[in-house]
Amino acid sequence: LNSLMKLFEDITYTGEELQPIVDWCKMGEEFSPVVTKFNKDNQWTAISLRGYGKSITQIGKGGVLGTNTDDSLQDTPLYDELEMNKILEKIPAEKERVRLMKLRAGTTIAKHTDKVDKDIRTGKIIRLHIPVITHEKILTTSWLQSGIAEFHMNKGSCWWLDVSLPHKVVNKSDIDRVHLVVDIYNNDVIKERYFS
Image (cartoon, rainbow, N blue to C red; front, side, top):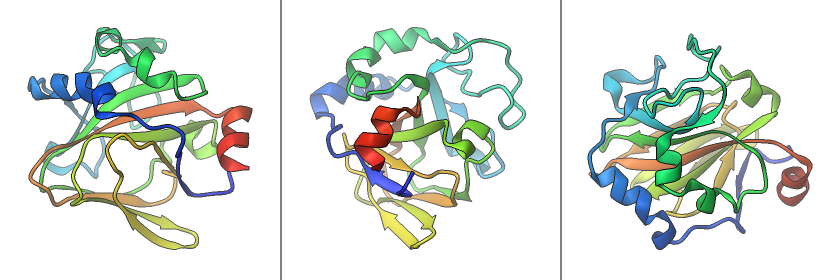
């Protein structure tokens, strides 16, 4: 991959397309804490839409951060309920884990990397972020080889950044940030369309 951060300009979502997710989040369902030493006070949580188990609270992946699961990749009931096929059909790749990830208002995900997932580290899987609930005071910082980049991801945009490099997120707003985080298997179409 010849870039370390990229906005996929041809993949965008309207507020109407994302509204079912927003409505579901407003129902106040409990999200599961992300298992990492960078998640103090459980400010960073997630729900599984597609993962290694049928439960929406089973957000881990076998072999990553001590998660033990022999389950195969599968959709949770929430995947169909939120009509994820309609949303994800815009992305020309096979999907691996699909999660909603929340960062509590006024909190920070400290500087870290996602190299614990060997498929991310090798580039077999790339991670896309689609902001569903966000605010201009929510900023991502990425330590790229060319320097430090700080940016806001607009609602409905689709971003890739090399999460094997250090990055952090600061939520200085008074709302919880929710992103649809989609891990996809890298392929020739993705490489040619976005990284050539």
